[in-house]
Amino acid sequence: MSAYIDQTYINRVSPTLRNFKWKNSTLANCSCPICGDSQKNKTKARGYFYCKENSYFYKCHNCGFGSNLHNFLKKISHELAKEYSLERWKSGKDKSQLPKKDNDMFNILKQKPKFKRKDKVLDSLICLNDLPNDHVAVKFANMRIIPKQHWNLLYYAEDFRSFAKELDPLSSCVEEERLVIPFFNKEGDVVGCQGRALNMSDEVNARNTIKYITVKYDKSIDRLWYGIWRLNPKKRVYVVEGPIDSLFLQNSTALVGAGALKDIPSRLMNSEMTYILDNEPRNKHICAYIERLIELGRDVCIWPDNIIEKDINDMAYKMSTRKIQKIIDENTFNGLEAKLKFNEWRKI
Image (cartoon, rainbow, N blue to C red; front, side):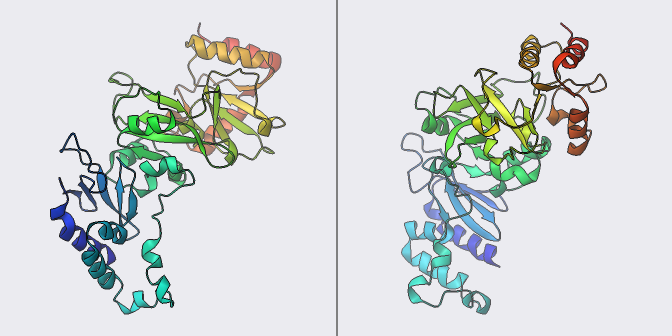
């Protein structure tokens, strides 16, 4: 019933919203009335109404404005907002949920929607958890079978270029939609991100754009460690190449960047660590990387011959994450044994 009332009032306000249309049964799109969206191109429409837990929220991908429906209506028409609030909470059940103090009457309405995160730089994005099932980012995540318990760590940017410039004004990305993977520091601030291209088929042969784009807020950081503050340093840490691969393993982090291999974050200085690179024995860069890790005395996974998949994400299509982790543990070597296994594995 709540969602039905919300849709009714969205439709009532829609004649005042430029380029308004329903994209599907639970997602509406319009030019944002808050920022104008845009002054140069009147066909731009980057404002969205979307349903979450039987209520509608509004989000603009251009200016970053986000609110529940009541607060949005207050920006457009106080009379309509007043009608909406009375109808939305006029049932006996909803009345019982209102705070007793008059001053707090609309506390529920004033709450920020759940896509609000610690770092405000993410306010211009929508969390994957808050997108409808037929959205391209959700379809991509399902296609790549990314575990849903980690969707709260992923975001969608309709215009990745605008978002990237918030982190690095000198970035030169093109205007396109991407899946955003933020990198956080200990305090929960965003220190960088990766933008993943959202293509649904034939990724190897049909790419017309860069698959991953990395943007750093702090350019003094050579290497980014994804997910490091979610790790338990007292347990074995699994170090992989890409953030998405790390979401398939327990206690896993991903290295991004060209920093020195010998440098380990202080948080992991006393941890047991296994390095897991892609299964590409003909890739000279990966082979050189593994060889250097062995020279440094690190524990390295050397994939067995029966594994033909290139990376952990590809393996997850055919086997459970538990089995993948078991294969990694059974094929982790160091020292002379690692060197012998590596020489058998490499094809160059």
